[in-house]
Length: 305
Image (cartoon, rainbow, N blue to C red; front, top):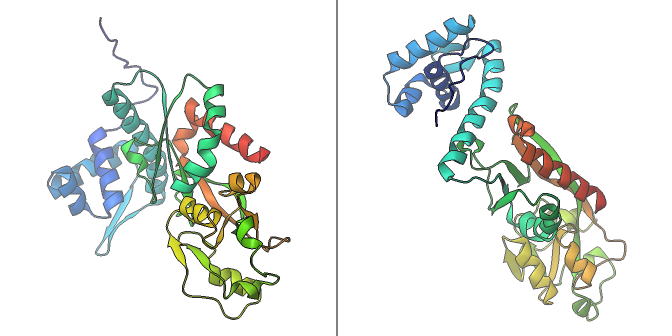
C-alpha cells in the first residue's frame, strides 16, 4: 500500500535542523553545550541558527559573554515551537509503542493517584471505555518533551512556564485527624493539648505541625514525632491503627473520614486551607481529545466532592 506524501503545507516549512539547534540552545543556554548535545561543531550550530533566523526574517537570539538570551521574537517562537516539538515527540512515541488503541498517560503524585484518583477511575472508564489509561505515580516533575506523559498532577509550588497550562485541582483542608478509638482515650480540648501527644509527621505536606501550632496560637510545638512518613497513605493508615495523630489533607483522607476510620480531632476542625494539587500539561495537549475528556471529567468530579 502506498502512503501518500502530504506536501501541501499552508506555508513554507522552516528548516528543521535550525529548529532543533534553536531548541537545544534555549534549553541549555549555550551554543557550545547545544553543539555537544547535537554532536555538531559550534560553527555548524551557529550556521543552522543563522538559516532559521534568515527564514523567519527576525533575530531570535542575542549572544553576550554571559550567554545566550531570547529576543522578543525568539520568546514568541520558542513558546509556539515547544508545543509543536511536543506533538512530534508524542507522535513518534505512540508509533514506537506499537499501540493501536488511544492511550491516556497520566502522571501524579502517589497520594492523589491512590487515594483520590483510583477510587474514581471506574467512573471515567465507564464514560470512555475506548481509552486505555496508563497511570504512573512518583514525586518530581515530568519531562513532557519525551512524549511519555499527557497530563501531570503535581503537588506543592509550581514553576510556571509559558508553554504549560497550570490550574489548581481543588482546595483542601489540612487538619488533625485521629482514630475514634484513640480519641476516646485522650483528653483533648484545645490545640495546646496536642503538644504532648504522639504526633505523626507527614513529611511532604505543605502544612507541617509547627505551622499548625503557630496558626492556632501555641508558642511551643514538637520537633520530634512518634512516626514519620513520606507517603500520605502511610500517615493515614498509621492514624487509623491508633498509632498517633495525623495532620493531613481531608481530600486524601475522605474515604477514611466517610467510613469513620478517622475523625477530626476538633469539632470545629481547626483546619488550614491550601491549594496544593495542580493540573499541569503543555498547552498543545489541550487540543488532544483524550486530554480534553480527562480534564473535563476531573473538573466535574471535583465539583461533586
